[in-house]
Amino acid sequence: MNHVGIKDVARLSGVSESTVSKVLKNYPNISEKTREKVMQVVKETGYMPNAVASNLSSKAKNRIALYVYINDKFQQIDEINMLYLLGAFNVAKKLNLELITVFHDAIENLSQEEYATYFLSRSVDVIVVFGLNRDDAKMISLLDDKRFKFVVIDAPLDSDNVASLYIDHTEGQYDVASQIVRENDRVLYLSGKENGYVTDMRLKGIKKLAEERHCSLTIRNGEFSENRAYEIAREEAEEYDDIVCASDLMAIGVRKALGSDSRVRVSGFDGIRLMGYVADDVITCRQDFYSIGKHALYEAFELKRGKEPEHITVPYEITKIEHEG
Image (tube, rainbow, N blue to C red):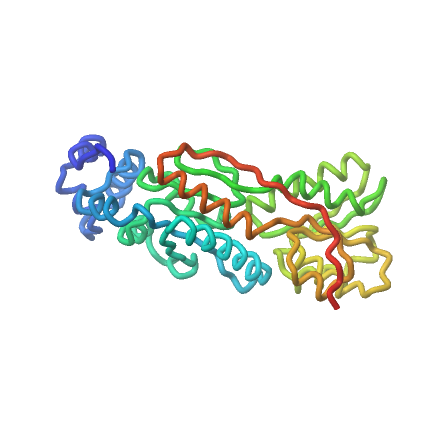
């Protein structure tokens, strides 16, 4: 898979070949400093032991891992992740690809070294990451490991082994909020999860709009939570003309708090189907998660065939989700 040998790793690390071997086998009698130095060289060079490389070359030709976040604090991802996975499995069937679905919560207790070993032991060299956030330090570190290639959804990263796929969240937030925000309005913005790439991009969009329309802008951390949004709206809604939510789930919480007769205008983001059952005609920025899942698998397939990673922007739609009774 590559031409780097254990001798090269030992030379670049300034240690013996036996030490490199012990580090890779996770021997306990190796200092942390030495372990980090060797593993950094392994990542940078893409070194892979012969046995692992042979296993990968024979089994990984049609195998791709899907890395997915499931968290009961952010219920809206249930629908979103299901659409991602359905799109991915649709393409996998057409291209005769084998998919391994890996849930973040299932492996988050592994060490950094074990993260790489986990995927290598399953003959995986291409990983699709749905919804990466800055809190996942182990996966972010793994992105630098040249033994793998990645397709990352919703995180515009700059790396020669990482392809990025996302909508323009900044413009999307600007566009959907502009449908309800008027000149000199008092605007409450409910942002998403802290340290999220998506959160930061959407924040830029609402700040741009507020500046252009001379609005007073208050930002609260809604955590992508329906309950949190409900609590904030109950306490503060009367002070504002508009409540712009960085997710539909938060918009649902806001509409529940406001009731049907409120004068406050509300917008959401994502276009989840649940919105149509619990909120009346809320404007939102709809993402086609099913198509994104499909597109991500096609991109992963091309990476396996040697294509250079790209940064790909996919379209969104500003729409009003009709109430489904």
